[in-house]
Image 1 (cartoon, rainbow, N blue to C red):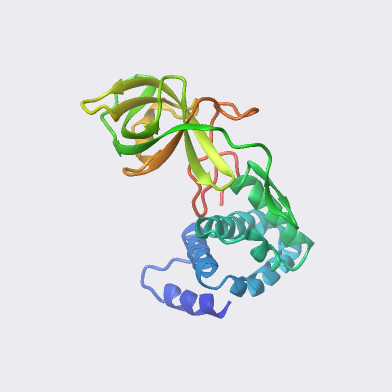
Image 2: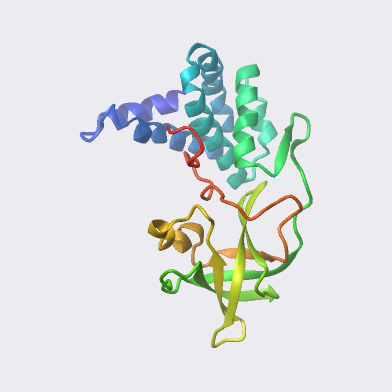
Length: 250
């Protein structure tokens, strides 16, 4: 990857560069890889060839390469609408192909991978009963087991017991239960109280709304979670290098 070699020389020449800041330095590679996915995906071929060898020669790097490279690749490709089969054809051997499936199991858990068909959904998507545009994050009520967001109902209906169904990737969504609905001054403006997950403790609850939703974001409303899906703790919204607490620390 000559393009990254040039980038790396410039990065390491900066006064603040510290070779011991491994996590920050790996992010530089992940960001560069995401850029290549958008601009020239075929340029990833040489990197995948090196990774195939490293999966065998340096097994302690396996999680780092899978999470910070292949998950970054699948996430960026999904955002750009790039057919993942185009990238999978660049994988040179069994090690990278196995790691590719591992990466997709995290970034696209509602699908399974087929070499011919690509991502194949495991179940039909839930039926949307409405859409809401997030508009604001009101102050929290201390010790209340839910948090508020304000939104504008664009179409359909909304009531307690429904779920906000947020897209994380083309094959990954998260549902959060609506426990209360309050109509505001306008007929289409509502305040929703959304349930916390069990893992979201008091120290982080004041940040939950802003970390999960953005003003202007469109979110689907569904009546029930898909069959087999339960309300449980989910990873944070997918982003480069993002891992859950149960995954290896990189």
